[in-house]
Amino acid sequence: GQNIDQPTEMTATEGAIVQINCTYQTSGFNGLFWYQQHAGEAPTFLSYNVLDGLEEKGRFSSFLSRSKGYSYLLLKELQMKDSASYLCAVTDSNYQLIWGAGTKLIIKP
Amino acid sequence: ETGVTQTPRHLVMGMTNKKSLKCEQHLGHNAMYWYKQSAKKPLELMFVYSLEERVENNSVPSRFSPECPNSSHLFLHLHTLQPEDSALYLCASSQGPSGVNTEAFFGQGTRLTVV
Image (cartoon, rainbow over all chains, first blue to last red; front, side):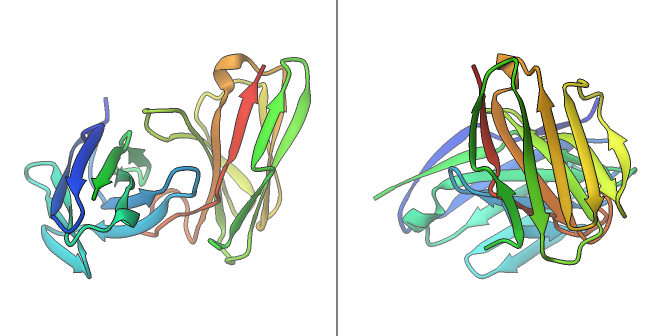
C-alpha cells in the first residue's frame, strides 16, 4: 500500500529552528508537496520538490531525497504565526496525490 | 482570499436530512476536487472532476453525490448521512487533474456535523 509518515505533533520555541520530517512509500514518484494549514482554514501551498536537494523560500526550506523516500520542511526564525499543521503529499506514478496526516506544530514564546 | 469559496462554512444536519455543499473557484482551473478531512487522518480524496467530467470516485458511499455543472462550480449533495460522516469537507481546484505537478488551491472547508 501507499503510505506517508510524518510526526503527529511537534513543539518549538519562538525564534528557533524546527525540522518536520516526512517519509513515503508510494508506487512511483512524481513530486512532493508541503502545505500549511492553520486551524479552521484552508491548506495553502508552501513548496514543491521533484529533484533531490534543498529548495529555499525565505524562512522555509524543503529537502528531498528520492533514494531514501524522505523529505523535510525546515522552518527558521520561528514566529507565533507559524503554529499550524504541515501536510506532506506525494504524487505517485498515476499522478494521484497521496497525503500524510499532517504534523501539528506548536510554537511557544 | 484563496480564490476557492465554499458555503456553508458550518453545517449541522440530522441523519434524515438532505443538504448540499457548494464550491466555486475563480481561478480558471479545469480540475476540481472534494476531500474529506477527519481529525488526525490524512486527507481523503472523494471525487475528482476534470473539464466537468468525473474522473475519479474513490469508493465513496452513495449517500454522497457530486455535481459539476460547469468548470467553476462543484456541489456535494448529502442525504441520509451517518454520524461518522462528520468531518471537514474541503474543495480544491488545480490547473490540471490530480497532482500533475501543479499545486492545488483549497477552499476553507465546510465543517459538517451529523446528529
